[in-house]
Amino acid sequence: MTERASRKGIWGWMLFDWAGQPFHTLVITFIFGPYFVNELSQNPVVGQTNWGYLVGFAGILVAVTAPFLGAAADKTGPRKPWVLAFAALFVAGSLGLWGAELGLSNLIWVYISFIAAFIGAEYIIIFTNAMLPDLVPKKDVGKLSGYGWALGYAGGVVVLVFVLLLISIAPGGDQTLIGTDPLFGLDPAKGEPARASGPISAIWFIIFAIPFFLFTPDRRKDTKIKAAVNEGLGGIRQSWATIKKFPQLWMFFLSSMLYRDALVVLYTFGAIYAASVLGWSTFELGIFGIIAALSGALGAWFGGWADGKWGAMPVVQTSIVLLLLVSMAVLSTTREAVLFIPIAEGSNLPDILFFICGGVIGAAGGSMSASSRALVVHFVGDKISMTEAFGFYAMAGKATAFIGPFAVGFATWLTGSQRLGISPVILLFVAGMVLLAMAKKRAGNDL
Image 1: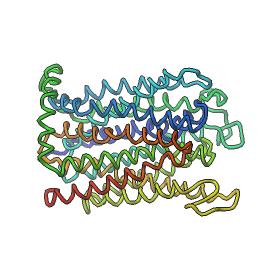
Image 2: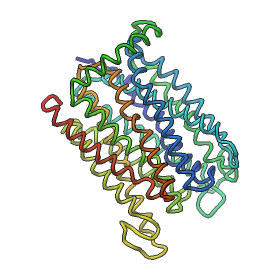
Image 3: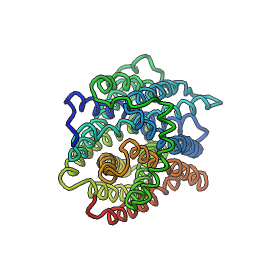
Image 4: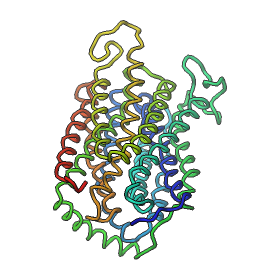
């Protein structure tokens, strides 16, 4: 039975979610993504197409390497050296986003920086997630996962409030919401407040990742990295052979691959859609993000509590249903109609509905993500090593992560419509929900 780590060790692990969340909040979802689509591109349709391809390509790179890294890390023992190496890649890429200047004719440096930051962020998660079952007894894994996810969302809220109050320009003015010039002399005419989202994410990460490296316990070193890589590459085939023997395992990994990718599409393109179709400024996007992050924190916390009371499976299934309904609501709303029903010109109903949808996306997405992390532990048990299992989990989450954004990019290009472009999200949620039910049925009393 796993002994409980010290309180400082557990808080250090939880703070890692807090440290990494601003990249997802500021860069991928609410600030830099809409800036890339609407300001760095010829037009929003071209921007959404290119953003989808960019996120998809980064997802491919993670998908083909994640399980091998997990296997190698499991052989070396300690995970912190791996976390540190990919943290350096993440920080370098995030800092590089400052170079996304308005009017750039060649965006190759922006692409490279984003891919580096994205890959670093995803690889880090593999190793920190794998440490979860070593910190608390199995019965508390879901609860700790939920609390860590909630703390991450709380970090996103703090960062967004900071940006709205001190960096972003308030609607209809030339100063921030509190009536001052943007902090650090950032010039909105040069896109600097949006470009600063990368460096802000990097600095925030550096500060709040320190407790993890100081206090969270790690495994002892077992073998050298070169030998570990060779062993890991050989062992990955055996682990996959083991997974294939248990239909509930590969069905779960496949289902999580689909429904988590659908959530990524919502996170990645929801704010972009609101900025382009509803005409939202950075300020409205920030409010939207705060609502989503606050509800995400509450959802993750409640999901952790519900996980401990009823188990992770009903939490994940309920969350998928809610996200599917929200996706349908988003796709049926424009400035002219809400849920396909025409509305009066100038009505604020679309804005109200989107704010509500943001809350549901945050709450359901937070609880689903946290409980899915716990489901890995419950489904896998002792069938394969936990680090390797989370490598597969990362692969499952990214194996179609390129398909979702690519599908959005292609659908946007094909239809010339941002709204129709994100319709693949519905199919992903439905397919994931069906496969998860099949995996649960196969697992029976083992789950």
